Length: 226
Image (cartoon, rainbow, N blue to C red; front, top):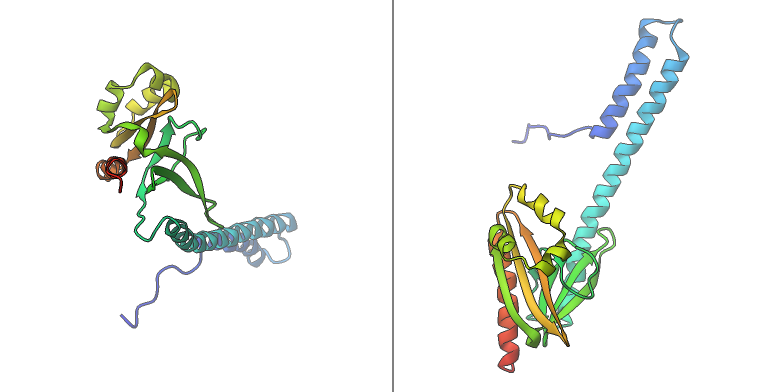
């Protein structure tokens, strides 16, 4: 409605600062000539700190919002170098199993480019850049599995238990939210790798299946010479 006022108003940080300053000023009005200078100074300093923190949080939120918009363009430019039809799918959280990725990483994406599946992510939310994490040669993929948590844990091999960590798996069993895992088995010379990706949340069945299909369809296309 035209006559309605917009909700919001003073930001939390600024509001707390004004409140603290007011607490320091109220005694002045109540006890004219006998107030505590120390109390007033302390309240003024605390109020200014709250105001500064509120302003800095607002600036950071603005930078993150701007960075999110920039990230869309940066990723688009990255994908275009592989062809106009290149589409990325979510790879969720990389867990383990790739020789060139040293640690778990969230918000990973995957694309098919030529004979490789490329894993990448967007680094630095304020000044976004695309970082390629590693590649999986599609002709060397021997198996791709998408499993829920119970199936995944029942099929974990000794090598994967060591890689994931027994304590990590034990902690996961206590969690309530839905999780799915995609395991890509592939060879790299004389070595066999099992690269694991984790998906969480209500969309995890669909997202894990989409990643599985990307590897299967990509491998089939390479075999058929497309």
